[in-house]
Length: 163
Image 1: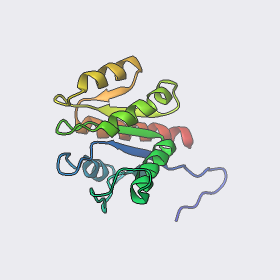
Image 2: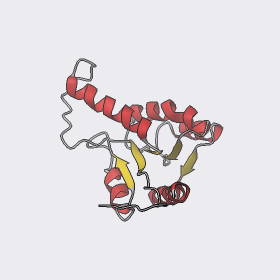
Image 3: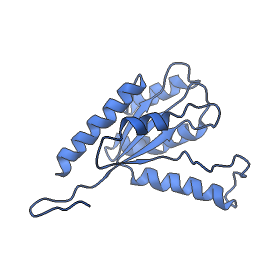
Image 4: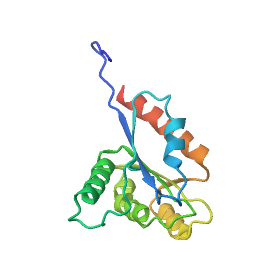
């Protein structure tokens, strides 16, 4: 339980959506690494689309209730997020991650949402990702530890603004 007494205001949790490569069997479980590295931060809420009970036999059609539920959850979670972090695993194609980056680029450019991108050498569309991030002023990092450090820094800045 948390208790706040006047004049202190309760902190809003800082929502971070983990957008990026999931392709089961191809993508490393980078979400687990990020989650483990950020467990010490009180007030951060990670929105992780990697589903424990995902069934690759689900038909990817709007009529499929389980599939639609997953996609709607992801879209809602990205809308709710204060920060969206994108990881493009070089062992994957990750078309949905490209779609999600495109979907939120304008809101980042307009200052409505924070985005961080980690697109290592070897990702098949790295040039497109790099040019888009450069054009729209989206922050990029070059390794997983820098990714985590920047999330921590943004969380700290957020907390300073809220309190």
